[in-house]
Length: 216
Length: 256
Image (cartoon, rainbow over all chains, first blue to last red; front, top):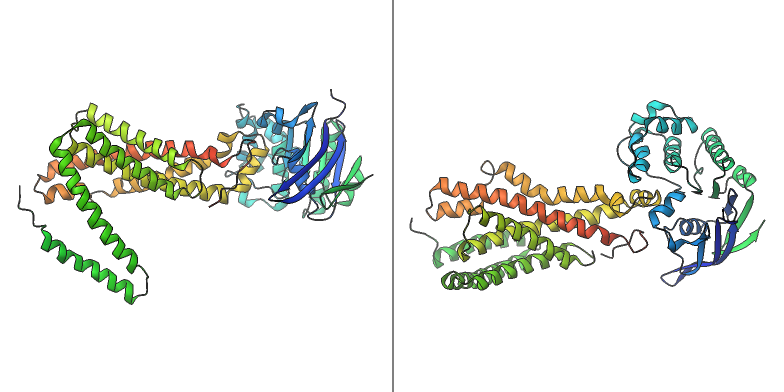
């Protein structure tokens, strides 16, 4: 296994003459829990999108597990480095449609038991599978979206303020899931303002005005 | 054949109907007066020219001239469909390919079945019908693709983030766009004879052809248009959707 799972080397992003990020360099060890903080609009989410290959750096490069990002087949990479949006949109009609999607894109038979087990991990009952997505609360949607990313275990989980706006109980459930997966060796990189997530992190990376400021 | 009553003076009288539309537009401040005048002038000039061209092509009956006329029709249809693509890259080439295949396959099958003969009086008008219907279907499909890639952007981004490839990301959007492209043809097939009496059939009956024969031709045309719009919009959508992604398999922002 590579000593670092991510080696971010002097990465920058400029879009339409506007520099969103510049000179970002840090490494992440396998199994580490890293939290990115900083004021709104500082470039935290942009950095996460670069790590997810949903944006491409205009300067520098990102090495993942010993190989430059661009050397990976994008679908393979994104299944290894799974990105969860702040306000995810569920698709199809039911919760089952969403949890079946990771199986379908891997051309695997949909495993009902695995979907039920995944729901149980985030304290959702099995009959939730049949529920229409428009009937779900915000917290339920966020949990379904999270397990959609985790039903096939990735190497890295990128979480963009996924607990923002959730009630305390749901937040605890999500934190518990994050801690559990981290214990299993999954690297977690989150963007958050949440105090308990900041406390749980192995390391904080502070981004201000598109640049790294302090590494605690 | 019955005597045809359309002569130049009858056409001038028919122009009075356009004047009525003009007056309504003026009075109701609809603002279509200029378009109406341009439409009338273009229709008269284009149809007069095409009338003489068709008369010549039919009288000389040369294969290359017939094919040239079909090529011009297909080219114009592709050019117009491209206008509906609103920024989709390579829309003209995609439309040209889709309309060429739709027209070629449909006419090829009709020729094989001996439903039509390779004579300009049949090939040229039928190509026009197929190409114009494929053009409309493809235009609608493009509009649907643009709309969905805009409205469902977040959902599509999430599919990509989960590791879906371009096809897995966009397939539902593509299916919906094909449905949208084909729906006018299907709706008109469902209501043909009940709501609408199509132009070709009406024209044949006007010209004195036995209505049952005219109807048989219309059935053939209905089937042929279903095939053509299906082939055209499917090819166009399958070639157009990858244009919404960049080389890094990220969603591109199409500049309208």
